[in-house]
Structures are given as C-alpha cells and as structure tokens.
Amino acid sequence: MACSLVTELQKIVSREIDPYDPLVISVTAINGGNAYNVSAGKVALKGTIRSGSDATRERVWRRVRAIAEGMAASHGAHVEVDIHRGEPGVVNDVEMAELIVASGKACIGADNVLNTPGWTVADDFGYYSEKRPSVYFRLGIRNEEAGSVFPLHHARFRVDEAALKVGAATLVSAATRFLSKQPENAD
Image (cartoon, rainbow, N blue to C red; front, side, top):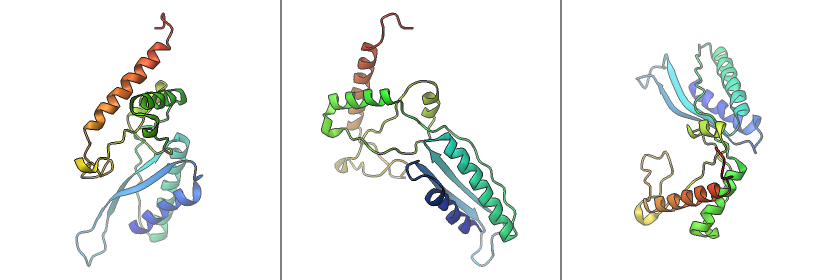
C-alpha cells in the first residue's frame, strides 16, 4: 500500500493541478518492516508538499488525505494522515523583484542575471512575504573548481564563498536604491 500511495500522490501533480501552478509532492522517507520475508505491519511515510499558492496547498492536503484513506480502505488497512502546515509559500513582490534584478545587473552585469522560472519555495522567509513586500532570490554558487556542484539539500552541497560577495553587493545596491526612493519623512 505504501508503494502504491507514493505513485498515486504523484498523479495529483500530473493530473489534477494546472501545470503553470508550481507544485512539488515528494515522499522523502519510507520506514517499515524489519525482515525481507515478513510483510510490514506498519509503515510510515514522510514528505513535503510545496506550492507557491496557499489555496493549491490546501487543496492538495485534502486530496492527499482522501487518496490515503481510499487506498487504506481498498487494502483493508488503517491510515493516519498528519499534515503540518509548515511555512507559507514565498511570494515575491513584483517591485521588490525588479529592484533586485536592477541591482544584480548593476553589480555583475546584465548577462549574469537570469530570469528563471518560478519555483516552489517553502521557507520561514514566507512569513515575511506575508507581512511586507519582499523578494527571495537565488544566488548562483556553482563553481566546479571550488567543488560547488551539488544542488541545495544535497548531502554534499557546498557554497562557493566567492559568491557571497556578489550577494552582499547586490543587497547593498538594492537597499541603497530602495532607500533613495523613500520620502524623507517616512516612518
């Protein structure tokens, strides 16, 4: 049932959600059983659901629960679904994103600033983006000579520390540009 559930959950992404509405459903841990010739009496699955839309996440939570309960019923099993809300999706403010793009171009040149497709970030930064106009951006850190070739969350992830200077310069430029546009008497 656990293996079937993993497969069925992936169908939510491919069959039930608009392909332009970013969504990730990942089962990242499966634990159960302790012998090769005995069916596990209990299996625990863990994973993550990430989307740029709270409405999509809530819809997916309902579908995960319904699919798991339906599969348990069809397999004569019992299921408990425990979904933690987690961090909100990060939603970039358009003006703040434009500010970072302009600052990045000024610091490292237009050819080095890429407009990448949206991605599903669930991070505590989302709490800030719920309250204030903000931007969450990626700073390229790939450098084969420095051994920085693995993606974020990989066990061998390593930051090319030279990229930190670029990030700091971009943020200073953005702060300077932002503050220069504020009225003098703003609180």
